[in-house]
Image (tube, rainbow over all chains, first blue to last red):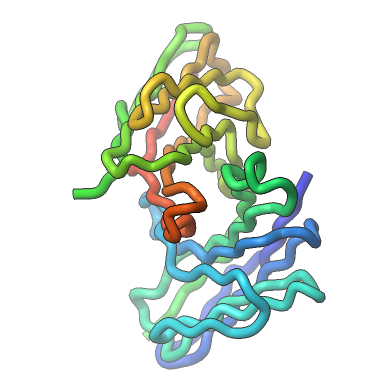
Length: 116
Length: 116
């Protein structure tokens, strides 16, 4: 069983602050990493993906990957009330591409509340 | 419009009565998956398909069947539903590795199932 663990939360930050969401994974061979946002009652939507060690920035979002430590994080700068949602970390495991590319392991999610 | 559709969106049934949840995508995606989402457990993959006639088990396949006879459709079949299959179900699709957009997974709107 490949495990993906997220800080359980809930996380509450004031508007304008930086929200930091963390995720660790058990499979050292994992190859692709994703952050999804899910509003209550809605389906998940992809907000960031990262494949290589280091930082990847997209607007107010920064994903950070450290394969040696097996963690991936998401920073949300200038948090807005509209960012209030559950954030899901997801990982494609290592192994033969033909058999693993269809797999996607999700963490249990971290609920973020941004208060005005 | 690129989309994944699921039907029905809501379903109440009784133990043992066979049911099918349909999933269809209009993006010519190779990969399709079914997930269930339960409080405190996050999203768990039930089955996935890498192309027509190619399917494989995810983490929680017991009690479910799938088929992929056409590229666009991936129905989920519960032959004899039980109360522990009460859940929120999501279908998802994404392109193959060669497309260069393998990270772009689209989720359907979800199907809420209650088994009495």
